[in-house]
Amino acid sequence: MPIYWKQMQGVSPYELIAHRSTWSLVLLLGLLAWQGRFETLRPAFASGRMVALNLSSSVLLAVNWTVYVWAVNSGQVIESSLGYFLVPLVNVALGSLLLHEQLRRMQWIAITLAAAGVGLLLVRAGHMPWIAFILAGTWSAYGLLKKQSALGSVAGLTVETLLLLPLTAGWLLWLGTHGGGVIGRATPSLQAWVLSAGFVTSVPLLFFSYGAQRIRLTTLGLLQYIGPTVQFLLGLFLYHEAFDSTRLQAFALIWAGLVVYSADGFWTQRDALLKSVGAR
Image 1 (cartoon, rainbow, N blue to C red):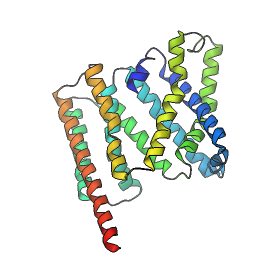
Image 2 (image 1 turned 90 degrees about the vertical axis):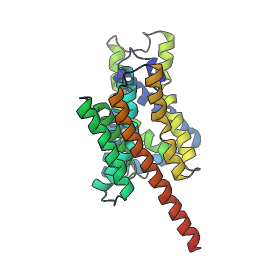
Image 3 (image 1 turned 120 degrees about the horizontal axis):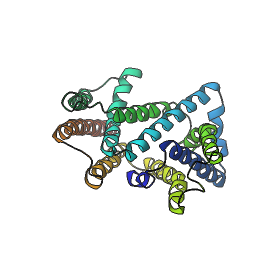
Image 4 (image 1 turned 90 degrees about the horizontal axis):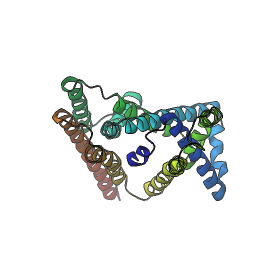
């Protein structure tokens, strides 16, 4: 994804997200039409509460997408990766604060290590990782709202981009009629990159949805670290972003927290499996 968005570095992130949302909607509506599954959208509009829930999800998704694209094209790929490394631990913290879930000892240790890493950035680097905080916060809150939704991943993203359509399509039309925007004015290659945003957004989601139903939860949890790890490596080795010893120490603490968190999830699932087998 960072390599993809870097191809459009000169385009406003607001325009890019408007294209991303609009063309994702076109692709998803085509998919639902091909499957004959438009009825899966109906629960989203069954009540005012469901509309508000999906509208809130739409706003969180739009903020997350916009900040991420801005961060990548502003030379902040490493910090954006930090945001997604923090997501699992923020999820645990939100579960404790909002859903009153009881945290296990190792989960507390994981959160403490991550908090120490962030604190190190604040104290020694004098840097508030606000990009990481916004990305982690919006994505975790988005996940929290999705848990309350009755929609599947395809229907959910379709509804979210549909609710954003007046804003995104309106913005693109305004740009087009006021002499701005990429379409019809930029090079053919840049226009092709922009128009592919819906494909780049939707296809990975569809594969994720397909795979998530067929692999173990522990495996799925470990796979979620591939994305931010690749982003981190790209920022460090391809784009040569700054990464001093203080940031290395902070990341090391956060990575240690993720190792503890992952080990706790693995052992908890293994114990539950052994108990279920023993009960039979």
